[in-house]
Length: 269
Image (cartoon, rainbow, N blue to C red; front, side, top):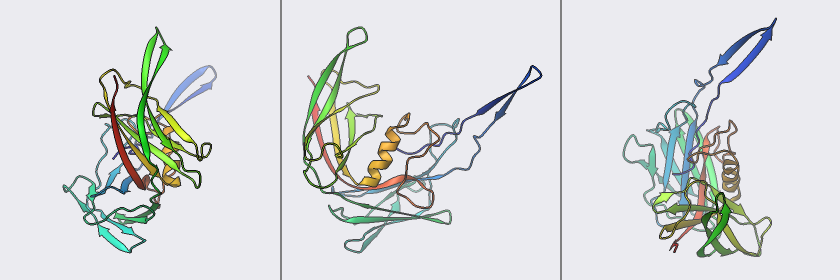
């Protein structure tokens, strides 16, 4: 599971000047209460589908998110009425997997999590699938000391009717990109889209193997990922005190997404 929220509590330094004397007061907010983080997906590909449950950590804690074990997790297909009870595997991992659930386009899925005496709910409807045509590449010249930077481009035809939103997950030589790539068709409905996936650190070089998953996501998930991508994110974590708008109830962080999934790969020469 990518894009897990990490709340970062900052030191507030107040400098008080009184009769030419300065006193620095440091308020350590690193001990604020933790929050539960839930992140789950259902796709049109064969399962099992997974739900990750963790807790947030403070700003100066290690980049390790404590798993939440022993939760009761269910996903219901509201179209068919089928409910799958997820099982944590292995125990203590905070990762819960489905058994028999089969994701389908157009179906609405309901997530229900009970943990620590609280219940958290979310719903997501899987959009229609838009065909992922191809991956191409573009080399941009003239970046500092004549440096050239190569990025992948995703190519697809946006449908002329309805609202569509997309998320792209890029892996370069087996290493997932830290960047978040989301877009919707508010300004490009019915157009042929060629979207360049800009990289912050890992640029593509000759012989590199690039794999990209194209997800058609619902509006709530798009809003969450767009807000997250607008922050100064590191490893998919926001470094701003503001939290992206979650589609999960009762103050939980994270998101639950029912989306289509298509993956293509290419080698850059």
